[in-house]
Length: 116
Length: 112
Image (cartoon, each protein chain N blue to C red):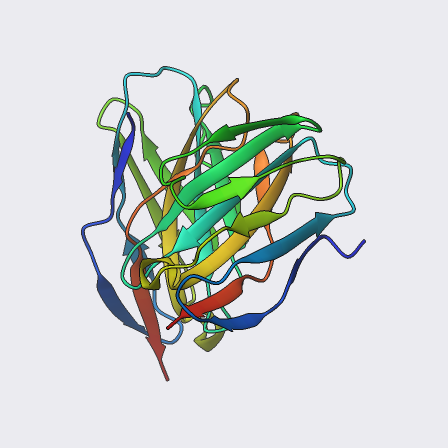
C-alpha cells in the first residue's frame, strides 16, 4: 500500500516571499502520478500541479513548481511570490498509473498562511 | 460544463436514518469516486467506479453503498447513519487519459 506523508502541519510566509511545502511517499511502484491540491476555506479541492513519475523534468504552473526526487521519494511544492489568496490547506496525493484512475492516496495536509 | 456537482451542500441526520448523497458530472468521465474528509486528515477513498455498472471498495467502505447506473451519476447511500460518519464528503471524476481527478464542492454531513 502507498503512504503519503506531509511533515509540516502548518506553515506561514510573508506576502511576495517564497515557501516550500514538503511531501514524501512510499511505494514499490515505478509508474505513478503525484499531485498537489489546494483546499481554501470554501473546502473546494483545486488541482495545483501534477507530476508524472516517468518525467525527469519538474512540473511548473506559473508561480507553482515542484522538486521531484524519485529516488528519494520526495515531492515538494514551491510557491513563489506568495499571495494572500494562496492561504489554504495543501494536500499532496499519489496515484498509480494504469489503475482505475480513481484511487488517490492523500497526505494529512499542510495549512499555509500568507501574511500581509 | 458544470463539472462535478454534489447535493445537498449540508445535511443533518439522526442516528439510524438513511440518506443518499448525490453526485453528477457532465464531462463524460469514466471514473468516479467518493472520499470522506475528517478533521485533521486527508481525504480517504470510500468507493469508486470505473464505468457504468462497475463499482469497487476503497479504503473505508463500511456503512456505505454505491451504484453506477449511468456514466453521469454516482450516488452514495448511507443505510443507517452513525455519528462516526460525520464528515465532509467529496465526489470526484476523471478521464483515464488525463489521469487527473476533478472534485465536487463537497457535502457536509452531521450525524447526531
